[in-house]
Image (cartoon, one colour):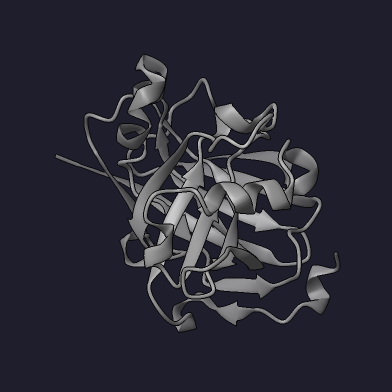
Length: 220
């Protein structure tokens, strides 16, 4: 997929009510073996997300914060009748891994930190197979880069199976469109170094440049 040949649209121009869901990464690493719905989370609506360059707000008492730069699918629900993939964008699904490690059933607590979404989305008939990304962490004067890939080649779940799973998620019919955070099977860049207050995380995608640049903002 030649990203430079796809003309993007502004996310803010999307019409209708837009819900935000996500697959629990750990549960889709081996795919889905039956028709059951994989564990997932609901983040609310698009208005709950931070902008591409906004702060990611989280409580000071968060245990183990981790950036999760992910490919986000844009799904049209065809007025609550079916789920159709129409494009993709990018997001930082900031997660409190400490909550999740304490108990996987606490996935919603793990997702209390705010997530962000890119300014643009790219129309497509199917998700990209593989995109090279760079995740950059700015911590004071220290800058570190982490190189990885995102896309269908790195998910053990087919597009058709994923869309069927979304159509079984609670509440999906109430939305005109759905943003689906697809997980970070590439792993976490700094899994042994939790994100800290005032850290800045930048996502750079080959051919596209800087897509996200968010600062962690901890509050009481």
